[in-house]
Image (cartoon, rainbow, N blue to C red; front, side, top):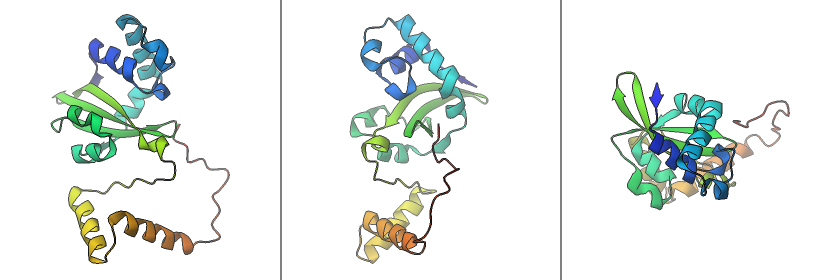
Length: 174
């Protein structure tokens, strides 16, 4: 079970990404806390609760890597972080465990690069150690990690030049 304080509901609804809410950002800036809480609760019931409950748990290091620097001061490594996708954008929820069955939601961030850089692919490693190992391997081959990753992906794609995605299958995470 996930609980959310009314003050957090109002704050998240006021500053949160437009993709999450049925009221535009500019309008939300003028709303009362009670109205913002209602906006949040609609989004929670319609989309967020299911997405957050079923999201992938990621490390606080990974959160820092994915979020803009301006959010780093709000990342609490003692809290759990969960990544989910909605309307082709990535979001990260931060939750504190209050007891064995209950969490309290404290933050939801939109990962800006999901839409800002549509040509960019983000890859999550299983651990920081695995990520560091890939970086060390790239350097030993005189590449940056991004260069080696792109080279590997392009080589793989060249092995399958005739591949065409199945038009009946959607990769959209709506």
